[in-house]
Length: 240
Image (cartoon, rainbow, N blue to C red; front, side):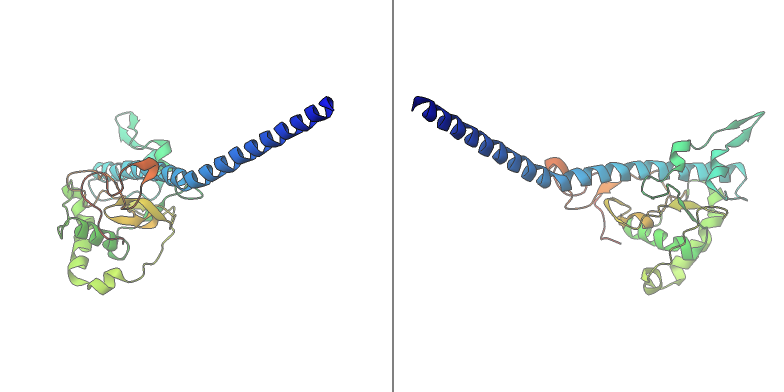
């Protein structure tokens, strides 16, 4: 009888242990599911921060390329920037190989933005709106020849023209370009000049004014319990 009671007791203990293990597994699973969105957003934010850093580096490389050619020539591929610029018997590197890769695009290739009003005027309008109606000047007069037509376009086109659906030019090579953008069309975690869409982030040396822009976090993003709302200089404008 004692042996039988002992066996029953042990079975009961095993059953309770199994129930406790299952309860812990359920709690752990629920906790992981609850944390998953926050982890995803944090990873996405880090990718976007890296994309902005690389895009800003390309914008600076484009400026250096234009200055070297006295404003008369634009690069036609990312390779033109990677090759560097002649400096005596050597070449001065103006772009790191890692910056040539877009971390947001599936194939890692940047979309090349042509220097024409139809392509870049919309981004210039977003900068103007973000900057309280003022469009920043260029950091060098050698860029003015590429921006004057765009500025004139802003002054002549209606708001309806500038807010109409955009054509998505997916050129990634062999075209003169004044900036780059991602091929990703996803909504972003960060904002760039108030813009919350990867494909509409244009990294260009035009309209830089005081220099590079620090991205902010769009309202409502709250990874890891950090205060929600915009971070960095200024508040993001409405989604565009």
